[in-house]
Structure formats: C-alpha cells, structure tokens
Length: 289
Image (cartoon, rainbow, N blue to C red; front, side, top):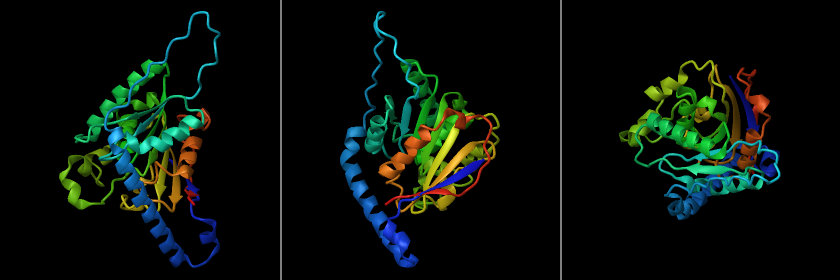
C-alpha cells in the first residue's frame, strides 16, 4: 500500500501568481539550468568516486572504558544510479553526517553490470559485511534511480528485508521507464523497461516484506516516462511516496530540501516500519525553492 506526500520546492512568488503556464515555463527553465549545473559539477567530481571507498572497522573499546549507550541509528548505505558512482552522494552524506548519522557508506557497482539481479546479490553481500563490521543487525538504504531498483530487488526478492529497515528511493523507475529507446542495446536498460522480467518479478506478491519504503519522485524528472513510474505502488509493501516539484532527476540526491526529507524518512520512529501495511493515500508533497 502507498501513501503520498508533496514536498514544496517552488519559490513562494510563483505560487502567489495565477499565471500557471508562464510559471511552469520559468520553473522548467530553472530546473533545466540546475540540472546542467549539477551535471557539470558532477563531471568534475566523478573521478574521485571511481574507486570503492575505504572501509573503516570501528575500534573496540578498552575493557576498562566506561560503557556508552549503543548507537540507535543503523548504518546508511548509499547506492548510485546507472553509469554513475558514489561521488553523486557527496552532499547528501555530508548532510546525513551533520545530523547524527555516524556511519554512512557509499557503494559502487561496476559500470559493466548487465543484470539487476546480479547487482542485488552483490549488494546483499556488501550489507552482510557492513552488519558484521559495525555490529548492527539492520541498515537503511538510499538508492538513486537504478540504485533504488537494485536495492528493492534485494529487499523484495532476495530476502533483504531482514537486513534493510528503510529503503529510500530517488527517481527510481519502479514500474519501468520508456525513456531513451536507443539505449535498449544495454541489457540493464532493457530490464528497466515496463513489462520486463525484472519489473514483473517486482509486481509479484510480497506479503511478509518487513522493509519500509519511501519513494521520492519529481514532476520534472525527464528520466521517468511516465512520471509517476517513480511512485511505488504495491499492495503488500509499506510505501510512502513523496512528490517533489520543481527539480529534475540529477538534483534529487543533491538538493538540500530533498536531503531534509530523506533525513526525516530515515529518522522516523521504527514503529512506522511495522510489518503490517499502513492505510495509504496519495496527497503529500515537497516543493523546492
């Protein structure tokens, strides 16, 4: 079942004036300019994220050291999108660290990956290693675009719900996207098409899935066709959809208003992630100024 939030991001002046067509054009131009700026910045950072980040094993305290309360918040795993790497999360991981997330890790999967199922199995091995290394039984995951689909497959089809408390997806084609048909030569792009075997597997029943899902989707996301494919709608899943207005696909893991929404989703009371699906509606959202 799903619930929906609207995350307001449009400038206040645009919401006060009734010229909707002109406002939409201005908003689209601003969103496009922001996408170009983010792309340029990301190209500069891209080389820094090619290699896997260094794993740090927490040091065990001395036997005579005073016992401190255990960290309640689970580790956060960040998973990038198609033809990308962990550098896309530089700002988000900084925001999470500044607000109390002591353990945040970004994972790279190979750009040569040709199968969502294989990537999901690799993700599962990474998460087992993270849990063993940190002493936590569960993690939270934030997945951008294809990264969200890989994480969802792990949770829903490979038993990953025992390890993933909350999965946040950003611009993920949950029902498949028809964008860029010329890229169909790539196997993983074909798996992201509506009606693909992977998409159909994710439609299958998942009555015992314990993970709580939060899906952020934008009304200006040009990578999603149709736009609402980034909404997660499954009768067996506890899912909350957050509509973002005024920004594009690349801005979702970067914009501070979205980062704030992600923090709120991850910090929600664990009781919200109960195994019983909650009653759902579709009326919330977020507008980015």
